[in-house]
Image (tube, rainbow, N blue to C red; front, side, top):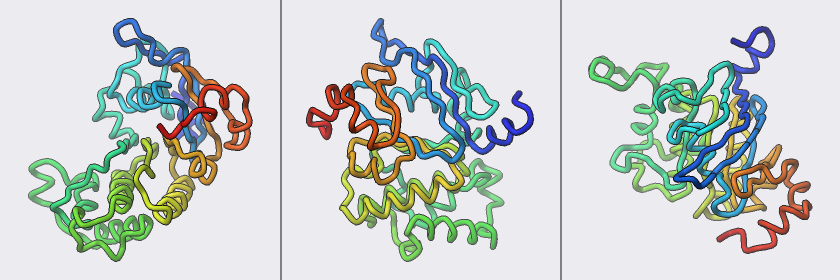
Length: 258
């Protein structure tokens, strides 16, 4: 266990990854990868296709078990924990395609994301209390969805569905959010609003965002990590990594939107 101020930082969402590696049939998808992400940091991970970005998120959330190394979220060792326990520990994952209940309203999607609304007994005794309404309205406001609460989620634009899914993670009380290409397919205005939303969330949560769009990356990132062939190639501000000759050579020099 971590003591003193470290424990406070840990609970706030520090993530320490050391010497992480995973092999698939002899292929090293990630090798000797170490990252240190501070509480309430918005870290963006970039790199060419096949660099190990999604595999990294898979290992943090327990979908893929590392072959070597350690993933510590606060004072918890995540490697070896089942996915549902990692979710309960405060790790939330959003995939590229939005995953919302399209036949339910925005408000209903948010309500069922609240802890203690699942399972037979919880469902039987679930009530829309004033506290439930307050939390749903608060998160809907944060996610720019207040005026859409009574609409079916299927009627939302692609960008709004992405915001709804992020809002659902906030209501699950995720302290670490893993977002895979959150602005793919969004309009320019939706991207601007998403940048604002993610920066607001990072005032009290830790975020790891995988993204290809360097303009968007520069607008949100406090720090950028560049992966290449399963290793950290470069790290720094968006401006620093964009100037790094190695990054230009393996990533930015090509059509990195592919």
